[in-house]
Image (cartoon, rainbow, N blue to C red; front, side):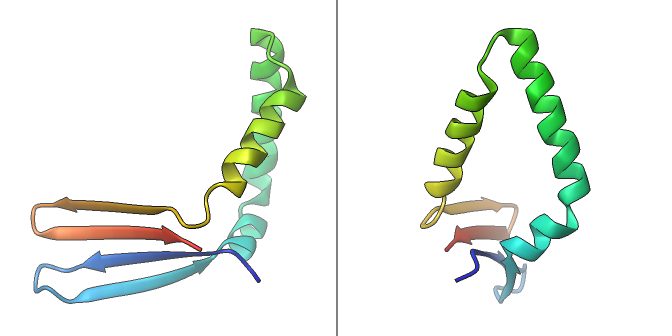
Length: 85
């Protein structure tokens, strides 16, 4: 099963708009930027004395903990809810 992020946005008229975003195709589309982010992360780890392997392990644990996460925000009549499955 491909991880899926659901974003719901309530418009000012009270109706909800739902958008389902599959994670894998998004990661593939953004892979050049991800490579730059990984290179920058390794550089920062080396500069601060943090083990790159430990940082990568921590990032993996964070990603594994994401399914089931819900984030809700409401401001000025507009509401946004993000749910990770």
